[in-house]
Amino acid sequence: MKDPGSKLINSLFSESHVLSVSELTEKIKNALESEFFSVQVQGEISNYKNHHSGHWYFTLKDNHSQLRGVFFRQWNRLMRFEPENGLEVTVRGRLTVYQPRGEYQIMVETMEPVGVGALQLAFEQQVKRLAAEGLFNEARKRKIPWFPGRIGIVTSPVGAALKDMLQILERRNRGIDVIIAPVRVQGTGAASEIADAIRMLNDYSRRGEAKVDVIIVGRGGGSIEDLWAFNEEPVARAIFQSEIPVVSAVGHETDFTIADFVADLRAPTPSAAAEMVAPESAELKKRIISLQRSLERVLNYYLLRRRSHLRDLVESRGFHADRRLDHLAFGNGKRAGGRGP
Image (cartoon, rainbow, N blue to C red):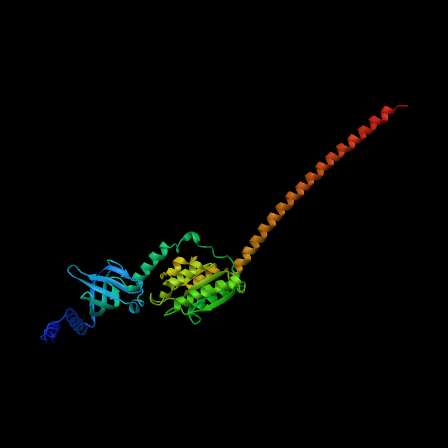
């Protein structure tokens, strides 16, 4: 294989006339782009800047050298994480020359963090940012109604999770109404659908069309990629802004998503969520009997107090009435004695 460096040198000195700076830079640019049209480079990010245009600019460096890089918006918008200074990454792209400064740089097409997965890094960055905004604050979380009259479920209409939840709700309490908001739970656009469904249930309830007491948002298990929609910002903000208490039920017990941190209650699985929000009919019956007995005790106590009060009142008035009669009798006697024969 021919050394690309020798080809570059030959191309620069193949003509006898004197080159202008622009001509030389153009030749170097063409040579670099033809020889290094796809390279992978590892280094540490520094001087990172997220430009208002959406382009990312940074320097990739090691202990001895540095290389400028640019990651244009049409490529970086596909990224789940954002670069940060000090992060070790591997980038793939093509070399080119920024002609106004005569600097060679790499135009990045993909970027991966070294030592940690891109999704894991994106998750950590998202958690840190949303926590700083107060979305995970425990003080704002609401209690789940003990006996909801209507439950909204945001999940896939074809997944096993929905079937399991409906079976459990049917078994535990047939008196609870269910509204299903069908959505995609993974892939492009899933996060937007989930967020829209949460807002839709809130709108229905607010307008009085169908009052919803609690919302379950979830899906069955999967990889971190499969569950990613529940880590995205639109879902987190929709849960945070919901006027209806939200229960997150994503994946298995060992799976944690950002939706879990924002929700008013986290259920380890969708089935567990159904168990947690719907009291069993037998349990409800016991609760009603207990409340009935408590009410009877309160009423009996109240009636006894009222009866005692009335008795005291009657006795008090009777005493005063007797005194009044005695007084009248005494007065009449004095008047009769004073007239004489």
